Length: 209
Image 1 (cartoon, rainbow, N blue to C red):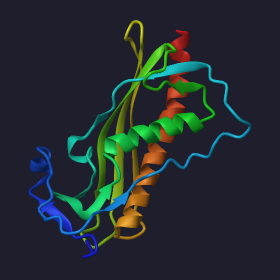
Image 2 (cartoon, one colour; image 1 turned 180 degrees about the vertical axis):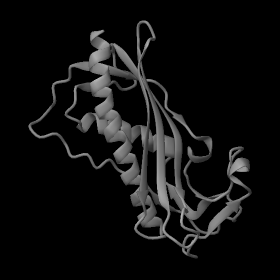
Image 3 (cartoon, one colour; image 1 turned 45 degrees about the horizontal axis):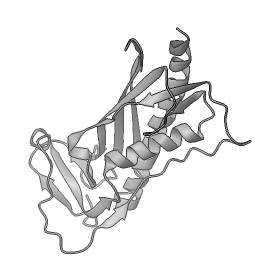
Image 4 (tube, rainbow, N blue to C red; image 1 turned 120 degrees about the vertical axis):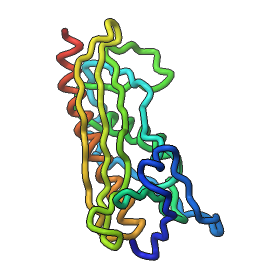
């Protein structure tokens, strides 16, 4: 890793599962980052949806769910010093999921908290991996890995309609915070685009059944 990243190493990845912590004192305000959904708005105005989808609470890998940006180098896990997400990663992911469904031209409409409409199916996402991996050594640009387990169930009988694991690996253009954040955006966009498409296909059959 370059000195510009100055990561705070924590024991091993196994120990990191118990909760990663930064070992460096906070001497300066951390630079805040976010990721955005790149899906273009649908042309021609509002899309006519054929069915609603209830969103169940999202699961998120504990070591990555907060505002610190997680990296992994072999058996060692680290957070990038002096850099933070501008909100917990789990919250940013939920917001990106909402935007991805809103901007899709597919049949599924994701209900928001407080919506009074009913839904024939429910979607639960479990973000199992959300990290930048140094696959080619600590000085090379890392690869961001986002892995999400998706589950669709009927809201009435709780029958499983569909289940699949989606993963995206996006190489950062450089070993700097900005390009790494861009790779997080690209991986998140890729995974969510496929989940939205899959939900539309699987859900259309499930609600009819």
